[in-house]
Length: 464
Ligand code: OOG
Ligand code: NI
Image (cartoon, rainbow, N blue to C red; front, side, top):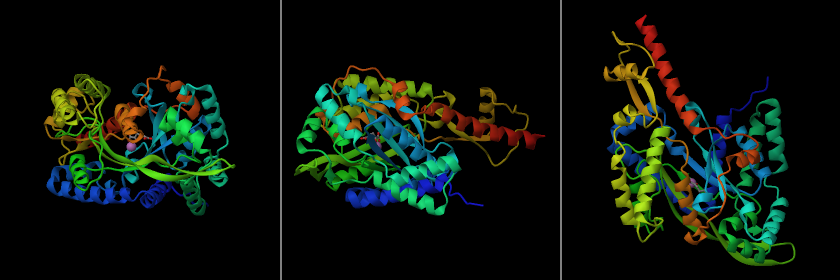
């Protein structure tokens, strides 16, 4: 019988290869990994409770290999093939992010594993954006962009053939899996040669640097790879001391006792040499798109918690009266901290007010005594209060649209913010993708429910 390599194994191999490749392409990324590793070790030494929490949820072991990447695609065909390729690695599209309201002409999803065991085996995720060419105002330029995109094939024939083989037979053997990861890696590689004229690149660039970044190149080069830190402020201040040009403002919620969602900061983009070659003449130039980023992840919020987050963030930005930037950074941090004072900052309160998602665990003594064993909120709270059950935060595995727009803008230049008159279009995105995106809230709810059911079943057994 043929032995299939698990999707977790294929994803792990691919994630490791990608990290090796990006370290060679962007040496700053290697420095970042070392720094993040040091700070993580230090944080775990200083915060034994955090270490215990991460051990309990299974995140501790995955931390050193945890990273996300980002790519930008040019057409529906590219996006739907990308979905098929990621499925081989056990990565599925979760969430819809519309960046158009923030002035970036893309909409996006994140490909990632879904079950907690799979996430803990390898949490590699890729923020994947689709360029909305229909938003290019100039019809001639739009046509030229479409033509350039229609000529490119971002996957090798072998990568597509192996993807189809996986779909038909339900797996890949050892040798095919190895060929697959190496072939797919090529899609994400940086190419110094761009198959368009320098003039077309410049025209696209003048419309929006992002459009040039997608349309003028052979494929969707990975534009950053982001390690996960346990203390983003510590990493940020180290980087600034080392002279690395960090973005002034950490995106997302402020620093808290109980981290929520996602905090991110990025480092200015790299200028890289490019040979423009449209088949007629070769011209030298340069392009800046690739950058460094770090992230700190906190607890996933329920729809109620998320609504509160969105409201407080919006209030902070309104009070600032401008987009956060280098000049108003200190003021923004102060306002943000003030606004978020109304966001409860203990796990007990977050749980009690149903603002966040939690895993339930059995405490050492599985005796419910005279307590009711039921998933009813009051019953569960009584079991928690009696120390029969315990909770641990479910980590947020996804992204944030306002933060993502801030990350895009910091490496595309602030000037690249445009007002597009266009509605959010999840249906259009899903048509391009060839599938529906999964609802991240439902996934967290399922993880929470499953852990509670598991505890209640054990309690019923020991009670009987
Ligand atoms: C993606 C930016 C979004 C994040 O971490 O929010 C992102 C891009 O620049 O292509 O990676
Ligand atoms: Ni990112």
